Image 1 (cartoon, rainbow, N blue to C red):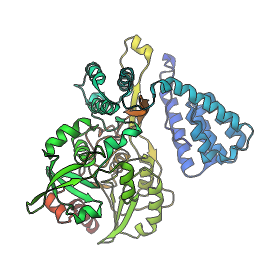
Image 2: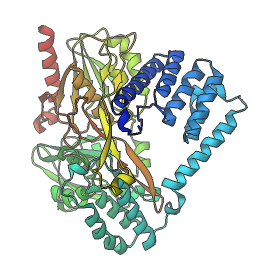
Image 3: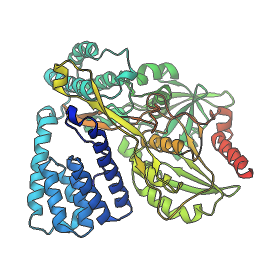
Image 4: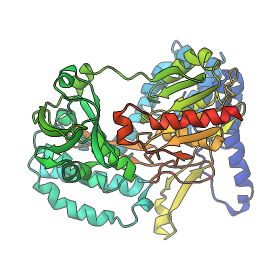
Length: 552
C-alpha cells in the first residue's frame, strides 16, 4: 500500500465555490478513515471508505491503488483488479513497488496481473523520460566535460527554482544571480571531484538540511572517509565524544580530549574554511552538528589527519589519524540498535529511539512493551535520532493516548504555468494536520518525557511535534535541528545526484519549526565538565522532572 494524504485538484467554477470546500473535506475525511481502518486491519471497511473518497472526488492514482490493496486484502479480487486498473489509467507508475507490495500478492496469479504491471511500467518510463531522463545521467569520468558540468549546475538551479519550499527562509538569496556567478566557477574546475565540491558549496547557500548534493559512487571515499572517532562542540570547544577503535584508545585517544588543531590549523578556523561552506543546514545548531560532529574529520581516505589534542590537565600531544572509507568504517563499527531499553531508578523506563529509518523500532518497542507498562514513568530519548519514516514514530506515540492525535500540517508550491502568464500571484497547495489513531489494545497512561538535541532531525522532529501538540508531557534538552520535509531526488551528470526539499511542515496549528527548531519546555545545555565526569545532565533533568510529577 502507498500511504496517501488527500491531494485533490478542483475545478474553480464560481457556481461551485461554496460547495467545493465541503466536498474536498468529505473526501479527505473518508481517506483518513480508510487509512485508520487499514491500520486496524479492517480491510473491507477500508476498501469501502476508499471507494467513497473516490466517489467524493479523490482522483489521485494512489487513492485507487490503496483501494485495490484493501479490496485484495479483503479477498475481493475483482474489485481489487478494477481499482488497480483505474489507478494505472490515472497514471500510477511505480511498478517496482507494485510487484513487491504484499497487499497485492493474491492478484499475482491472475491472468491480468502481467498486463497491469507492463502498463504501469510504461507509465514509469514516460515519467522518467520527462523528469529524469538518461541524457543528463552521464557516466562517471575523472573530469566531466564543460557541457556536462554546466548542464548539471543548470538542472540543480532549475529544480530548486521551481520546487524549493523554503525560499522565504533565505530572503536575501538571489538564486539567479548565484547561478550566473557559478557558471564560470564550474568551467574552471579541473576534475569531477572539484566540480561536485563546488555543487555542494552552491547547494549549501540555500541553508536547508533536506536539500543536498551527493557525489558519484567512485568519489564517496574522497568526501566521506573519517577516522573512528567523533567530536562535538561543547561550550564552544571541540571535544572527542566517542572513540570506536581499541588501538586509538590504547594510544591515548579517549573521550573528553579537546581538539585544538587539525593539520596545523586552529580547529575553528579549519571548520570555517574547510567544512562549513559545504554543509547544507537549516539552523545554527544544525550547522554546528554538521560542521563539528559529522563532517569535521571527513575527507579523502588518501589524506590522513594530524590532530593536536589537549587533555583535561592541559597537556597537549599530536597524533596522525587514518581516515577510513564509509565501507571500512561500517565493517569496523558495531551497528547502533534501532531501540535501546532500560529501567532507571524510581521504576522509570528509558527508551532510546535511535532511528525511524526502519520499522524495526516499532517491533522492538512492541517487544519491550510488556516491561515498559510495568514502569511508573517513561523517558523517550530521540537526541540521536536523525529521522526516517515519520509513521514509525507515530506508531510509538499511538501507545501514549487513547484518542486520535494530530500530526504536522504541510504545504507545497502549486505552480500553474497559465497563472504565471496571467500574472497571478504564486500559490501554495496545503493540507490540514494529519491524524493518527491510537493503538487499539495498548495504552501507557503514566508520565512521559521526550529528550531532544540538535541531532534530533527530520522524522524525529515530526515525532517531537506530534508529542508536543498532544500535551502528553514535556520536552527536555536542546532545540532540534529544524529541518523536515519531502525531498525530490534527481540525477546529475557523472552518476551523482541531488535532492530538493519540496514540502514545508509545521505544527498542526501552523506554528513554524523549520529553520528554527522545536524548542524544549525545559532547556538544558550540556556542560564540558559534566561530560568529562560521565554525567548526563539532560537525563538528570528529566528524572528530576518526573520525580516531581510522580509526587503530585
